[in-house]
Amino acid sequence: MPEQTVKKELPACPVETTLTLIGDKWKVLILRDLLPGTKRFGELRKSIGTVSQKVLTAQLRDMENSGLVNRKVYAEVPPRVEYSLTELGQSLKPILDAMWNWGTDYKAKNEAPK
Image (cartoon, rainbow, N blue to C red):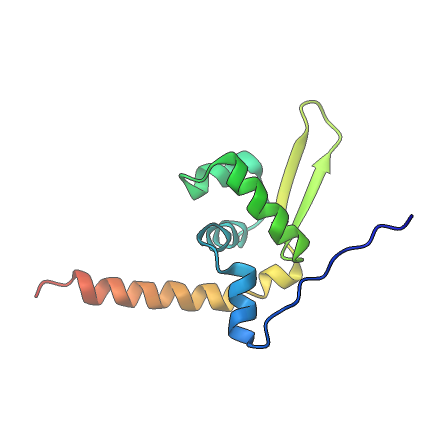
């Protein structure tokens, strides 16, 4: 019996569609940390910070199902798993750059002595 994938109904609004795919704090941080290149699970967990293994695994699976992240498993003992961004995931770079610039400006304006 062929395996069927269930496609999510995407919102009509493009902004809402984007938020559906990357609107979680952890997903944005995963994107940020995978933009420079491939990382193993442990490297991602350390670079992101306080995320639990369970939550990180769930977020990575969701991003893989959305076509944003590649997961490569090596047949080794112990198993080695590497994550990287797909071309679609890489296409989010301008959005993350804009968030970086906005955050930098915001911090500069709000940390300045008054």
